[in-house]
Figure 1 (cartoon, rainbow, N blue to C red):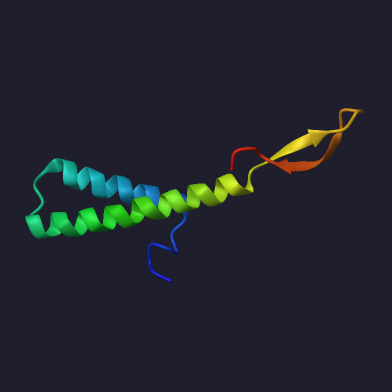
Figure 2 (cartoon, rainbow, N blue to C red):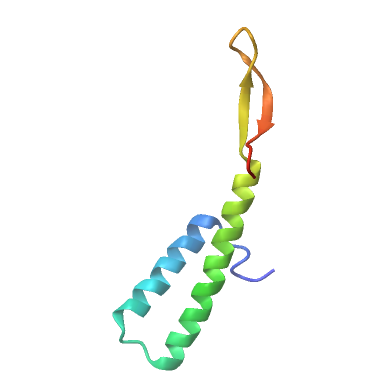
Length: 78
């Protein structure tokens, strides 16, 4: 497992925001810019995977005739 794979969604987003900030400043040497860009791409992909996993876990609570929760069903369209 890579260091990025071990990150939570929130930690990965923070690191991605930091990468973007550094790249936007424009004062980073070319070689470092390339490394930052590659890291940013990996962080972005990690965040997308984490979001997809979360979406797959989302379920809608169904209510019975008495208005009380009767179970759950997957959200449509996933």
